[in-house]
Length: 197
Image 1 (cartoon, one colour):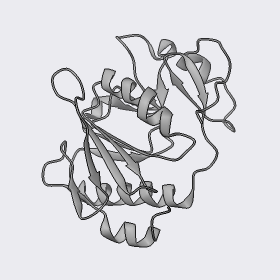
Image 2: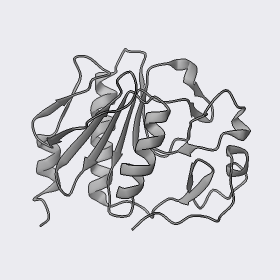
Image 3: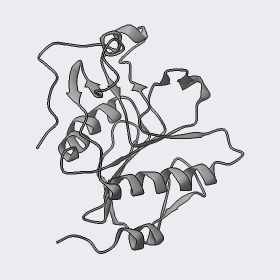
Image 4: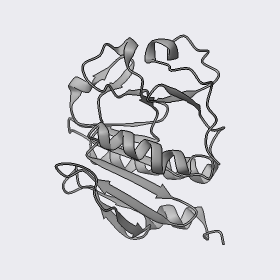
């Protein structure tokens, strides 16, 4: 099941800013997709734990970590904000270039994006957003599958993401864009309980 489109029109960040705050959308190449209802507690636990571990690891460093909702504007060239047609709200994101941060959020590709998959967003995150993040030169893209206990990691090389690194959510996983920093999974997985069949 994919996310519902708002309509058939082409939208920009200028349009997006005029919409009511009580309904959230993401823009992918001008198409407005209705964000899914509130995620499950497992989803929130995973995103919160990743944010918490990254926040602790970044103490005293210049990189900043954020948790959704934060608008990430992804221009295709040097267009003004009002004309950007791709705006996403990743679950967790890391930005090491302070020049990409402003009062509205982030402009340009973060260094790391983590999406926690749920049935209603899986195809959106694995297909549409993968292409968008690759185009925006996001250096590392993690897809966390809390139900299947799998982590899929895409790392940007010179041209594209190439073949993903697929791992079990166990032990620890080093973050490529933050040398010496790893995410530790075991306590989180124990809190989530047994995997669903």
